[in-house]
Length: 301
Image (cartoon, rainbow, N blue to C red; front, side, top):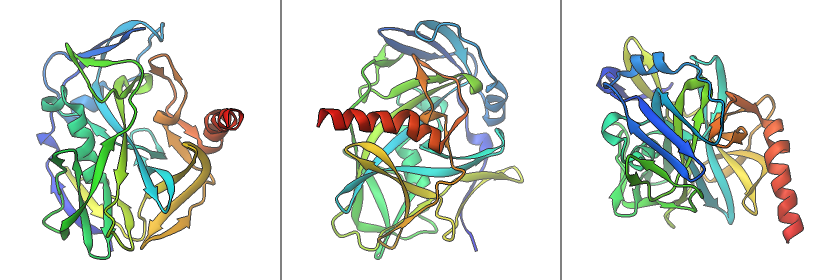
């Protein structure tokens, strides 16, 4: 049976629409207009058209963040991806850990990003659940009331290399240099942070689980489903995906089928500052992105 971890009132969420200016030197965003609740934000997420992918000014519905999380396990690196059913788009995809940025964190989206890791990515060791830390900041433990978090051991998040072009919120440059793109089908600006996840040395028989919120009777409900962990490890070789997909249960890597798998738009082709697709088929992504990168690695070796 799924275990209910938390129930929340979605009306507590507020965000702000954006005005975004992009050029060859970088991208700048700032809040625009009045705060929006969750329903109002979704109503604004409608397709937008931009003619020039490298230079434009546009109003967008919201700011979102994603985390490309790299985990080193048993001497190999993996990206963590989660399965999400998207009723508003009528599909199910594997995606990066991600979420909407609330109004009070628009100038500090990294805080939203690490909070999303704490909420969506649950790490269970033989001794209990692991809390996390980013530099000097402890990640929240959102399910403290129902799960037993370890006090003597935790995982660490650290920034990896940032994007080449800077992103600014007003006049403030985001120091972690996330990758930025405007997703045309949803009229949203997305920031992708590249982080590593370091496990404590005493973490034994580790299992990974994804917890996602769904709307039920006007409440956001988060449940833990042990039979469907819904979090996957995408295997890398020399920093490049090699086509392997796994789950992790009690320290054992279990192969997962990639038949019929789709990836979210963050894996799709980016043209300048724009992403036009809703999703990309797994096999198409490997052939278009992973295979050419593997060839470059081989040539340069």
